[in-house]
Amino acid sequence: MSEPDLIARVLAGDRIAARELYDAHSPRVFRLAFRLTGDSALAREFTQDTFVRAFGQLPKFRGDSALSTWLHRITVTVVANAMRKVKRFREREADLEDVHPIGSDGPGVDPVLRERLHRAIADLPEIYRTTVIMHDIEGYTHTEIAEVLGVAEGTCKSRLSQARAQLRAALSDLAPEYDT
Amino acid sequence: MTDERFDALMRDAAHTFRTPPEADFEGMWTEIERRSSATTDQPLRSRWSSARRAWLAIAATLVVGIALGRASMMIGRGSPLRASATPAVVARAPRADSGATFASNPYEAETSRYLGQTAALLASLPSEGKTERGNEQFVARAGDLLTTTRLLLDSPASDDPTMRNLLEDLELVLAQVVRLPNNHSRTELDLINRALEQRDVIPRLRTAVSDNSAN
Image 1: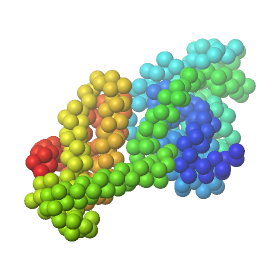
Image 2: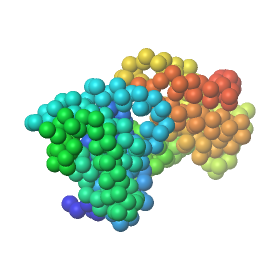
Image 3: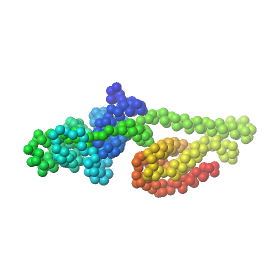
Image 4: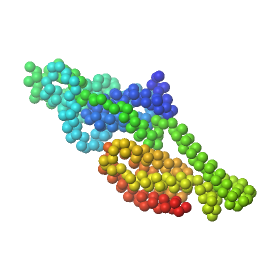
């Protein structure tokens, strides 16, 4: 079934269609929410918020962009708003970095350097962090990020470039050691 | 640091930075459904079918009420002519005919039951440490009462301004209760309690319960 048909069924009150839509998109939404927050409880909450809001606003969805883009835009907005409201988030985030930072070990990367990079990404200003996470970590294209964030593609590229420069600067004291 | 080295680090980060854990998608869906159905939009439910069920229930109450009213009038007065009064007239008949009390306003019984249940619910606002299951049951009951509140607001039961004000305040409080998350904090409960206090809801609710019982 095509996505427009699925959306039409959801709008007609079909709960099975709503579940299909959720099944198709929730893994990516949760993944994005987790990458942005680093906290599984918050990611769960924001995923729920995203879908509650999306189902509520679905009648307003015009189909100008892909549904996934629209959902990810809601996710980023939900996360950004919540992070601004929850003041304790940053402290909590810092603690959680010690809990969730390391996944499967990639070969040839020093754990200290990896940890420093993870912390540097987490410490980036929000607009840069979101761009880096979406592009370098989650593999979104500049076009997709621009649509989700509602900025020009050039702005997105510029933000990524500046974000990377900040990351390199954050690792600069380790650079001589790891360039050999 | 060379570009190659930095790119390698970023590629590594794609696999190691905040690697998403296993997620309980089923549990999230349950919560999404619950929250969606608690809102007025009700996007995941058939709005038509839920509204139809509710109105059918009210219509059934009305029909039974009118039938009882007619029957009691016939028994009480023994006049077939009076018993043929129109339903509208019967529904507004004075309460002097005690046998027709319930029939005189079919909403009274429902309102009375609703007020009692709401008073009981608000008197047992969950504590901070309530279990998840206990909280779910509590919120589900609040959701049912919220639906009833809205139906009563659209019914003749809210013709009385005092009752209407009370129902509007209860709608607000119940909507807050319905949104209580499982791991709600003390602050969220305080907000509800503050709303109850500021609007003097509990004393007004008790008064309404006793008034309805007296009727």
